[in-house]
Length: 93
Image 1 (cartoon, rainbow, N blue to C red):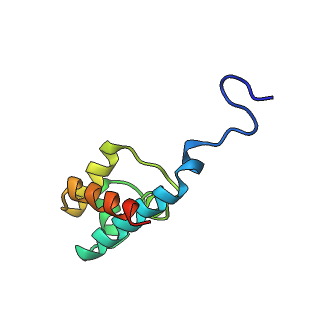
Image 2 (cartoon, rainbow, N blue to C red):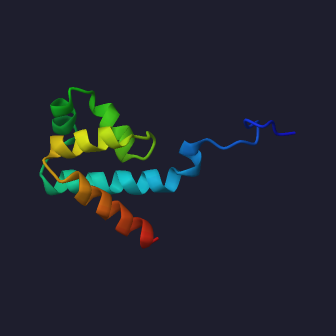
């Protein structure tokens, strides 16, 4: 029996969005590579370990809009452009 707030059969949002998170990561990888940056370069600009960015690019870590903006700024790309690219990728699946 499932309780009102979920239970054993409840899926996490991360699990539900696994495909979308992977697409987001792929968009970020392409944007980073277009700028000629390595993960370690972007991570250093963010003051975070490269593993943080790696998990996002692999689709194993969720991020919020503030983090997306910070990553875009670290790569010196337009955050809105990244969102448009993700939208286009989602429509094309």
